[in-house]
Length: 338
Image 1 (spheres, rainbow, N blue to C red):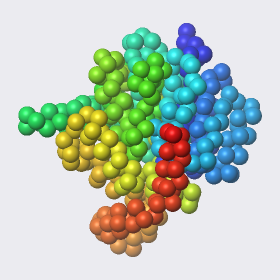
Image 2: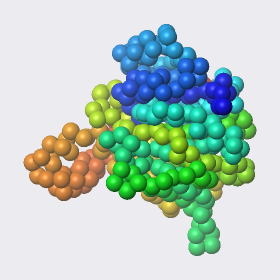
Image 3: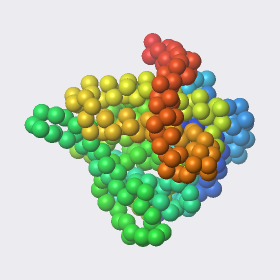
């Protein structure tokens, strides 16, 4: 029988604040009461903070409040700073967990001696219909004899599991994502924690590459199910952090870090693909605008306008809009490092 005194949940902000209480309620409903939750409330709006504090009064929740924006890896490292349990489960604040989601992750780690275990992760509404990632591949790929390329590929992305069922089985993998993932604490200790110079994306690729280089096992455990659900509506507080989270500045700093750390060839593989992802992902906050244009001009025209007009304008103005957030984050980060 699985015990839960060897695991701690590290809950952090992914890209917006709005889903936090819904995520926390999901975790509290389907997670054993004795499992501790460490929540890093980085610059969280007061009304959401109040809801977290109310839940913390009757549950095993430790709140770590920081009056600053944090990158995801900064927040994860802060959450794990005082954790002493054998396992840490990183989970984003825009995820929903299913019944009996935690036990299979621990069982897999113990039975397979795995350092990292990923659940089956879903996306979009209706919940538990579309796969987001079911394992995958990450590696440094050698091309043309000399190029060192960042390569990652999630498996079964966007697959409709209701219309086309798949009987997934536990298996080794080389790619996970941070929506929810179990990690052995001693692995984090050996690596000195997650790399905080990777600000925007590629955090999962970096962690998986380090595990592979250390000869450690990574597993996919489909008996555990978690859903990543982007917010349908974004508040002004959400957008301020969202713009920094997916900013050109954080993206370029992340790319530069990976190039230096792994001697990667610039503008190849996922270092190149990631730029397009960030550009497209920033358009998610214009959901209402997209719907309005589509209702008048149709979805095809709406897509063209969003990508060619709004997208270009967004990229041009992003570095200007996020200057106050970037400045305050940089000051906090430099003070913590000094």
